[in-house]
Image (cartoon, rainbow, N blue to C red; front, side):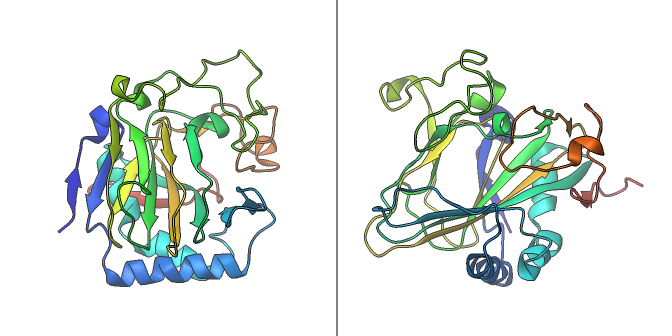
Length: 267
């Protein structure tokens, strides 16, 4: 049976041991490799040319069949719903994160929600590595940071403010310079274990050393209070044309965000 380590309500992040069985992990691994073999126009290399390869891609569930099956058939949405205390769970988007052997590039400290076009309290991201990761190369998260404030989002490689204008939001504190000030969560993970975290939880991840790969499938989920919040800039990921179909503050009842789970007993 899956075992939850931590408190999602208090910390904004938990580790779910044994969240996924061998068949689910195999399907996630198949989905990752299929996505790597057929990257979308949204794909990007998030590491310098002389540093291994940190490959990201987004929103591929409609064209990568094993990815769609994992999202629809695995217990991911049900786990997300229970952790959020949600009545319903919709898909927001999938996110491929692969660091090939020797990639030194660190994923810097950041929150996810300020990059997005949605708003609300009930949201959660799943971070599922299909390769074993130790605590040093796993996801690192600042406990309690999901309670706010919002921090200014910046580009990862050159720290540009391409979303909110400079000064519009608080600057992220220097977590590495004063580690005693923050309670940082990190878990060594085996295939089948997963981290679930709030989209406002500040998090980062190190590079990978030696011959190890770090292949991660991340899926973002939305509870029933999440609404559309169009931005005047290109969000990450973008949803072109959605502002013409959903008004500001509208529920995310749209084919791009299919309903995946409903609390038992709810009609």
